[in-house]
Length: 353
Image 1 (cartoon, rainbow, N blue to C red):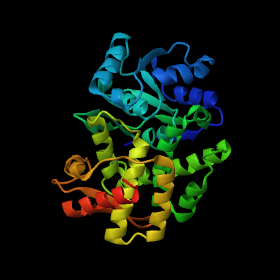
Image 2: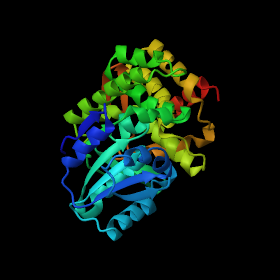
Image 3: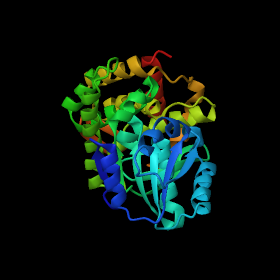
């Protein structure tokens, strides 16, 4: 898998101009959702870079990350004359970069694309690393491909338009990056003042977070080994997301990951000795900022079933990424059904359900 270029922009217009130059193309397309078409595209259209671009707009939020939406993007590309030499720019959050990346990877067997993430979640996670995909059959990211963008352009000024929920959704992935990197970065994230955001400081934290992910992806592009570190919180988190979708009460991805981190840090403590005090501090931060995902013990079997569908599993055995300590990563860890139910008991007890 080719290495994508990730740019922390000083000037988005300058960086985009350079990125477009590096992708010779016969036709330019820009994909947005209903929010980014209104909030983000106008500032880019002030320059001449997108004056000839064909606009494609899709519905916002994860409920539109579907085969039907994907087909509508393919159809738009096809009917508007895209060829295998065309270029697609994805301007949006993680849903847009995931789905747009997959559309680019599959149209005409693959066209070039550029990601311009507009949410914190997309900047530090979804747009970086080359994973693309859609939800299918009630399961998160069930269909997809490894297909890196030619460039990822990170403009943190877009974060000024984020509401609190979307800020914390992205921040959960940053917290995960802190947990898998080093104690100083983890502590800095726990102590960041989110009530009065210093955007210059946030830009530096975003840069650090992206670097953690880039370093891991470069070592293991196709997730055969250490890239599984990035799955901390996701085995349980994706199960929470799938249940929320099934019950028509969808939750933001980062919130599900935060609640998944609560569960998987407990499992880390139980199985490989993650320090109790660091677990307590991290869980308190999550309780203070993410609220709670509610379910009762009658839902355990359903959550367990969702976990068995996780892409990281082998032969039906549920696979976890756990931590001995901050930055001390244990991949390919397993737990039996009784232990998983004990973990869910712990979650409900410590979150006050």
